[in-house]
Image (cartoon, rainbow, N blue to C red):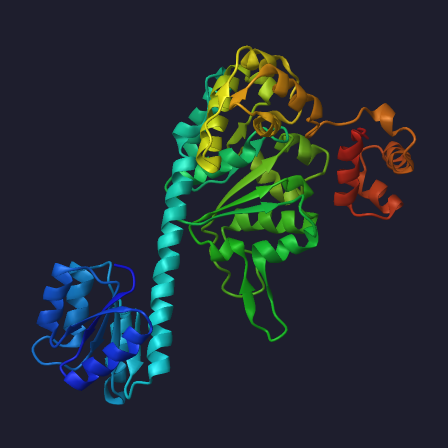
Length: 444
């Protein structure tokens, strides 16, 4: 069906001229001298595009458009009209026409419009295929949940997936919060809409406000942010506590009012669904002033705790099976697990959680010659794996930066902003350094 075009016109000269122009460009062309003949041709063989004159006897272009939209919705319609019928062509756009051309026709313009429509069709087809793949990958059934704690997570996702209310996910780095966020979206009522990830850990953090809320350009035109552009989609704000405080505050006010906080009136409605994720509970982040007070309403939202891998050892066999399936699909190579491998993985500390487990398996797969993931190459991969592993604080005692951060925090118990000002850095930067060195906030 791709690139097959049906040209409809009661003027034989127009038919031949258009056919010659488009055939030279590599398109497959069919011809019809009337609307009735065009409908018969479409019934016999599907076409990607119908290129039709508006003024024709019996069935004109407008009526033909209605019938094609009703009987052959997979075919796009491009209408041709003279200047006197321009209003009718514009009306046809509201009825579902892909575009219109004004006579006299120019070959270059015809080719450009046809290519544009067919390219859009291709992109829409690829997007549909990608969305189908994503819905399949992040379907509820793909959540590995043998352990009681993950069974509870699945039950919580089942409850919220069709809701419009924001959701909070908290859990350790690498525990699977991003996968859960996508599962909430792609298994729920919003699955056909867009999903976007905004990560508070990705610099420059100062640009997150523009990304989420948009901005006004130098010409005065307002550029829409993700909260507005995604409409009925989902935005996952990861590492919420590392998002700049002013952006946190705008998010909180937008949630409270149901309107996106932008510098225009009327303010657009907040229709996008928000999923937030953090490594620590919301109450602790609010208490230690790592979240803006405007986000206090998150206390009342449903919070899903994604457990660390050490608390869901029963899920390791299922996670390994998931890795093997994904590896076979992506690399075209089937792998098998040798004896005592599951036992080895279950007994090993995985501070990087599921992400580290998959990294270890991936490394072991590259070492495997016979397609078997055995104990020896798994042990080697585990030794080399330091994903998310933190050095003990004693290892940092010689680091000048560690000493400066530690002393500033100790001198300003419970006052993160003051400690940051003393060091001459932002609160976000200070918090990053504290996490890097394992320094805990001291209660005031």
